[in-house]
Length: 219
Ligand code: C5P
Image (tube, rainbow, N blue to C red; front, side, top):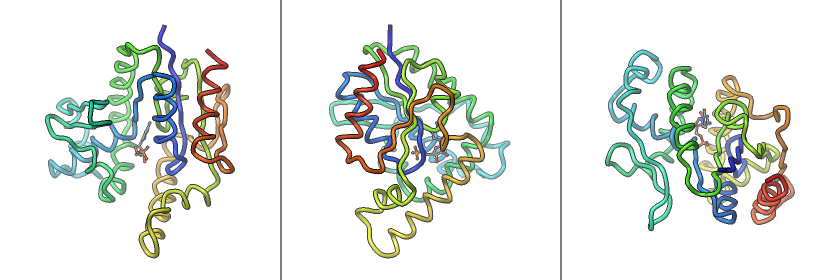
């Protein structure tokens, strides 16, 4: 049986890096669903699709082909044959992604893709990370975790390498994206049966350790 570990949390909670490190420690696969939403937003911008008008966005869904996973060079995200691993982290994507992610048809399409990736997992397990994994994508997951940290700590971690205006801009971007996303799915409060891991006072390794321990205890 494949063990599914579902991890949700706000922007800047460290859930991507923590989930990836926990997956590596456990020998599990890893799926970053935010990267798929970002890849879809990238593709919309690339094709000049108006991301505020849902019709064209929805029409472009069936031809959206993306691949996400690991190769000898590390973690990658591709749209068609194009490697977009770095591009999807650009500010223009961060500021567009919420507008496409709130469209129900987009969520349904990507949710179906995520479920098929989970169903096809060959490793002993998979860590799936995002905003609605514990509640919508994999509500029956063996382990469900909400990874949080105080707003102040999240801002500080995200803007750690930046300074001055860029740090402030990053903090503003995170708050505004979380506010938009929270109107669509509740990732600030743990649903019933979901364990909260609060990393406010934990460093990176201790947070990974907390997640790995939860998985080992519960499976
Ligand atoms: O996790 P990350 O910050 O890269 O996610 C980018 C965006 O993708 C989020 O701001 C949100 O709009 C969307 N998202 C989502 N549901 C998920 C994962 C991400 O709506 N499960």
